[in-house]
Amino acid sequence: MLRLQSKTDDKQSAVFLNHRKLINEAYGEFQLKSELFQFQAKKTPQDNGGKQPKKRKKNAGDEGTSSSEDLHMVNGYLELLTKPNASADTPPIARHWEDAYIVPQLYGANESGRMHRFQSQVDAPSVYLIPNRCKFFNHNVDNLTALLHQLLPAYDLIVLDPPWRNKYIRRLKRAKQELGYSMLSNDQLSLIPLSRLTHPRSIVAIWCTNSTQHQVALEQQLLPSWQLKLVHKLRWYKLNTDHQLIAPPLADLTQKQPYEMLYVACRSDAREDYGKDILNTDLLLSVPSIVHSHKPPLLSWLRDYMQLEDDQKEPKCLELFARYLQPNFTSIGLEVLKLMDERLYDVGQEGNHSKLGKYVTLPQKLGSGQLVKLALVSHYGS
Image (cartoon, rainbow, N blue to C red; front, side, top):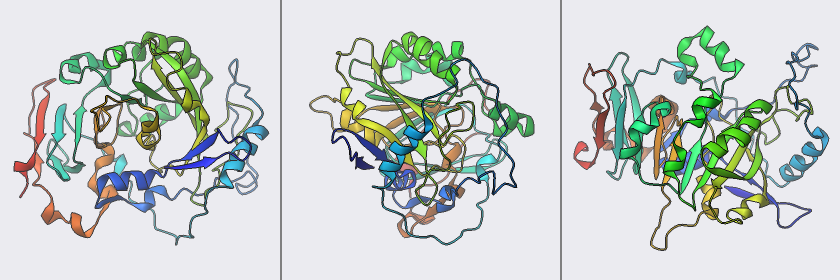
């Protein structure tokens, strides 16, 4: 994480999240392939044969604030960001994340002190990496109530990337069913028992699309139903590999934007000024993964604003609708291991296969709705 200080207000800053570096530091000798972050500049209409982007239907409230003001602020922070070294062109990476994800409902935990590998042999064998100090449930968040007895009474940080209803995912599902995740309505999201997993010092971070309808629903329906109050909302701006915006922000919010929204909330009964220092962050910046909905880790930024118990060294973290695993997190989602496919990683010298734990496999047939416990501990190692 890199904090960029505003030139005009010494209290304000932007945060640059180096997505790949943060993951690589957490995983040790297992490194996300650099090809996943080869994000090139978006073509202009002139580069695209003069074709203009297709206009989308507008809804009430879809006219945003001045895009020129947004661009001026973002560019001011980009001037402070060190330009990356020129990188050689790399061949396209095989899109393994588009392969069918066939993993049954299961619970896993790794406290062995090293990375493990898990192989599901239900239909198409795939090998997934399981980092140390993590827990996960390959389970539908829509039925989170069934897992409450296996979770902690409360978490210091909860991150959600809800499967908002959107046309892009509907198009993917029509083209290839396994590419699109199951979407939830706002009413379904409001039923998630989030209030039973928070305490008065919890911080909750919620990713949201640029849909005005979703943002209004989040502020007026979902936060109250989860017994949360808004602390801050900010934009996550996406950069290309040259650390420039992938496209300029547009005043017409119905058009594709170079950012997504992040909402930061706390419990409704938290003290009035809890988390107020988060407001000093104007925006987030990062080079995004080319994989859809592969969000950057937030703990390195939000950790500074958490208030832990006096004898607590590490925060207790939970991610819902997760698609990859992080140390010190309990991760839950229907595709919780999707981006842990070892084919998306390079293995360093110390992480060669001979030093990994043995494959842990599941039985071929499982009962309907059965939740299998997959305990990855040291005795699975060599």
